[in-house]
Length: 250
Image (cartoon, rainbow, N blue to C red):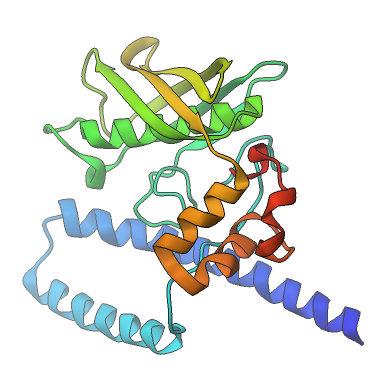
């Protein structure tokens, strides 16, 4: 009986994730329309009224307290790449993400990626916003660090913009962890469009022990920290976070 209940809860969690992803896909279309489409006021009036009702429905179902992140996959999922479910860069359940897809290069500490920046990511006309490019680099280099087993938090991130990165075009990403010296992890990356480099990055990341993650979370969300870590990084109680390796905290 207990196993059946666990299976039902697991099925519900999977369904909830699938519906979150579907909802985010639709929201991306809405965001793009809000940002970039010439639509009559009468249509916006109807759409905004319906969206307000939907927002109120979701507010009613939301629990009290801080929002909790949801775990899905790790550095290598069934598709061969990391999934950070709610990431603003690659999260399929985050409507502000492009989303970019990551995958590891076999036998290396390299992560590759591919994605398209849309109108909501625009900076200069027809070009990706420089801040979006820096955001993508931050996650790309972090994923390469996880691949190498050297998870850390960003210390410095240097981005060199060589030429504009276009919107609505397939963009390729390359990130490689060069190694660790003491607590410092050095990582590099680049973005390419049609074989030309549009931007490069160098990052220094600082290795952080699992206990420090828990301490940081407690400062940020107080009593919800342990539950957040439990949902984000594993099924065991978060007070046992010390038994995780830094490479598990992706």
